[in-house]
Image (cartoon, rainbow, N blue to C red):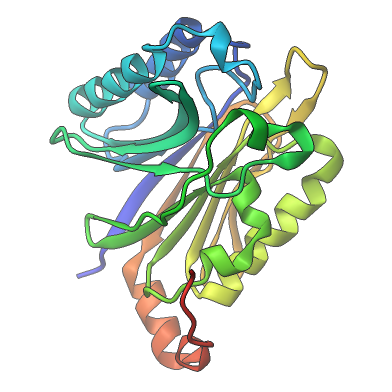
Length: 257
């Protein structure tokens, strides 16, 4: 029997540094999704935009958003993934949460903080990769600037789906498009990229280009406007191509120190 996973990518503008408004907006978008959706993916820092001023927020906003994600996952019977600003004591993190209808969740802290914007001066970088299983698929979720570093994403664990949530601006969008496709091909995995659209308070414009590529680098969905994109991931597609084209067996073996 064909094993598939139905996913929804929510490409949206964001309210600047306004978690309550963004949670309300995404609640409404999630509530309108078709019933067969298994997984919903939101952009990077989906409650604030890509701000370098996390001290403008109440220190409990990260926990509030995690609780909101868990409640929406439960009531809508979907898994939800996205990153938010999260504070632990005096340290700030760009933290991705993957939450599930049963109340469980995983977290990943962005490994490569974006030095061009000074993110490394504000947010503490993560040190560990996250892999998790959901409905028969193994996921590796990463965040925005991580996309430029293929060694961090290298598929030495035989994951099925590589995923990036982002605030990726228009001037460098060709790199986003090119690298998402490259990550799919070199890792023989589905590669999902979810970017925001619109303009932030700093004047940066985000063109979307949320997309999904299959294990051969074929683009399954793509958009440049505010909308929800739907597609299905196929376990048969992954297994068939990896059995036919055994490229992963020839990969270099290494350990990250």
